[in-house]
Image (cartoon, rainbow, N blue to C red):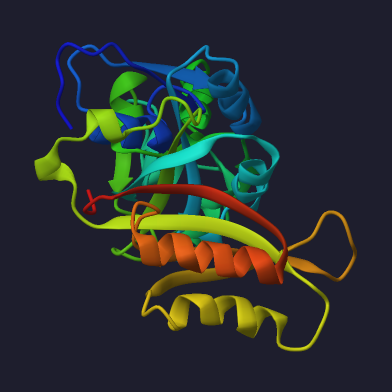
Length: 288
């Protein structure tokens, strides 16, 4: 996406150098884009809702670790819509002080997701693992202290920003480690005016719904997609926050609500579900 005349501000969670910022910079490729860091996912959502920022970028799923539950819950809490998805190849680095070596390390800091995505590498060592709220934030934190025994797990870009040393690059468990981000906006803003006809490729739609507590309820709802030959690309359940032992279902399927068969399927699910929310129809972009 390129448009040099459009001023955009994009909210992301964490500090400069976070993977969320990297996803924003890779997708919103404008000369005058402004990325704005926020402490929590909820702060990102609120900044967009309050019109402080035009868009937000929210990680919702990792290819190896699954859903990011807090982010999924926030999609239910806020009246914001998904306008694009960004699949970012996540490369983790072990980052330390200039002059440090791996043999010097005693403590390592990162977001819990960073630890999980690098557990195979970390299990070779007896380092103390100290969780932080953000990968890039962990680099910023140790950069303020001249302690060669401390290291962090974050992106290569974070090491450059905070002028730290990459002790080892590519320490993630799997070379196919991707994180899926949603770009979110207010419903009246959207993304379609920013996407040229050449860029309009495959579209996807995300919804979340709950079923009545009767046999076959989920089967009947999903049948509305199957009967119309609509390909479902994801089905994930989350515990309901209203009733114990009941669930809501996050579903992605190919197609746009501009298509009659997709609108018809949504109408069919709505009649059979106890609750339904459309998260958005959006451009499905290529992996970065």
